[in-house]
Length: 65
Image (cartoon, rainbow, N blue to C red; front, top):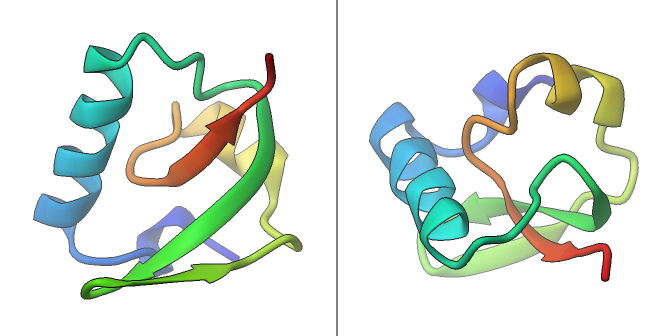
């Protein structure tokens, strides 16, 4: 799954800014979610290496504490 398939660009930017504001290290993930409007769908098969390369441009996640 590509990060490009996760929501619109504006939604991805809003989400990543929220993660940064919450001081979440979005490079270390437990679960990754795909956003569909107000619904959040678990996508456990997300390609974390792609996420690392693209600096998590638009994901909702649980942080790896």
